[in-house]
Length: 138
Length: 165
Image (cartoon, rainbow over all chains, first blue to last red; front, side, top):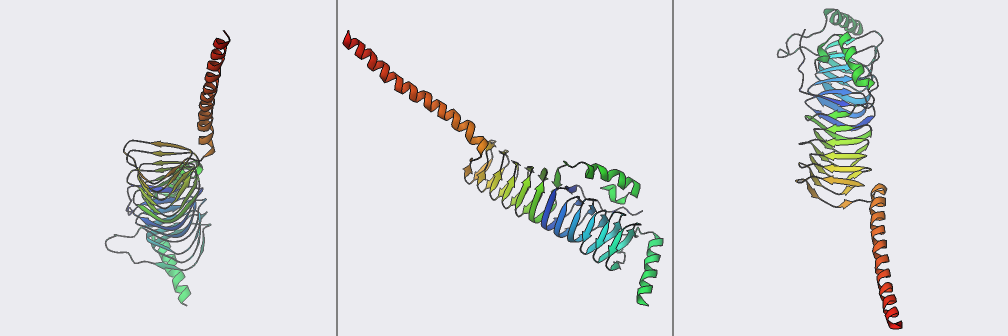
């Protein structure tokens, strides 16, 4: 299993906090509140159950448990958990959609960069997605 | 941090601690830069940089080396870092030795440590500050005025008595 690059600290946007604007930095982020704007982070993002995010997201790894509207770029893995909802296009090197997850949009799989090593995605998911892509082409 | 690399069960086990505690303070780490408005309730600790307006219904702590460029409103504000903009607190503002502030301060209570830099005006117009301060000063003024009033009277009484004698 590939270890994600983990930044030194994790920032928390708690449930009652609302941010409108840009968020940048080299940091892990745990969001339980509301965010409107854009997020670009070198660390990982966990979007919690109570979170409502209307933003374009760029991060190493993204886990979605709440509601996200916007485009997501995960340099490593994107995971949408059963309570999660993603409306928007996403790009990721590997992906996990759990049963119950909501996803509306396009998905583009990134090629693994040599520096990042082997992708962590299970072969099952990748083959399934490849099949889906082929169907779309036809 | 290792949360993201762990299995789902472990991830689930970790998340309720953060989400379940409603009063947990929001925390912006030192590598985080935010441009925009931050609002809401609850406590907030800032170690990074922020450009924009702040409107918080809770306690705000600006850590050492943190910087804010914009106006700040909160219940209580504790500053150890740099702020450029107006600070408005319903309760108290506490400036530590490392604090640097360029802007006005509005609050009802203030505490400034030696070494803190302030470039601006301080307005203490909060209701909780005025009542005890003004009442004390009024009493002292009243007592003084009573004394001053009494003393000439008593003197005049004495003189009048003397005259009578």
